Image 1 (cartoon, rainbow, N blue to C red):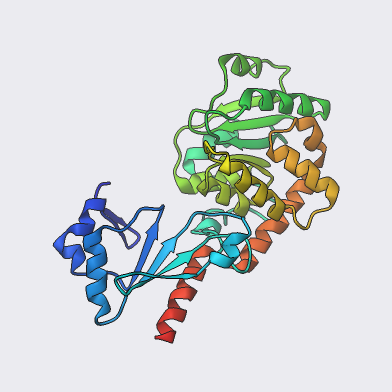
Image 2: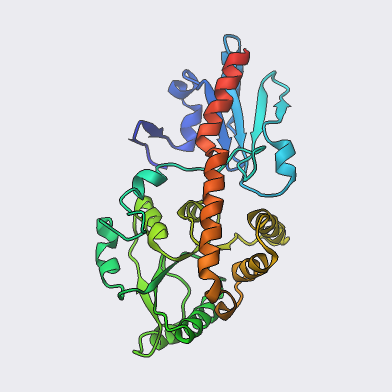
Length: 318
């Protein structure tokens, strides 16, 4: 990774963790993330710093809705070198660490309360102008194995049955066949495919906010879709041991925990690539549910704020 700085954040290559200048200025708070273990020279420098005041060492874990994360969150892990490492689990309950908010509200603040776009960012201005009046909008950002052809065809059929039009934004070269693209270029198609150029993260956040539904993947866009307060399908990263199915089901249990049985079954089926004819009539109810979930997340507190609260609590207890 190239050296750079932005917004007061300095980005260094991994190898810099062993440079004399970095080792001489170990942080008061050290966050270890993405299961990347800190280089031994840096840990040794942390131990040396501890003779004055030990750094607060946080092991930022992956996001999960599994119940055991409640018990593991903020558990100390005493190290043989005398330091404590604290496990920090992002999550969706008061007992976990929340999810990352970032500058979400600053980016999306130029939306009216009605949801109509006032001034889209430059990278989206032309494509949003090309949308058909009163069309529903869907963004798509999935892994290559996602069954997009079949799913898009089912959306087209459901939209035609309800007299709707759907503009679909394809991000990052999605896996849509040439045959499907040709089919949706015909005048009698309800679905119109719009291929997006590469856009900055802030503009992608804006796109999620103005769409009626979002197809997302991994962890980051999954979280951003929840802040958007719109129905979404989470294309969770597949794992060979099928551990991703356990994580998906744990999230769905949590996400629809307070829903009535009908909405829960409809939402779960939609999240697992069910035919659009089953959930299309319920988009309004699913949207209200998504908005309530977003409000619940905000009430729990966002990840960066809760990390700061934890650091302050550790500083006070010293």
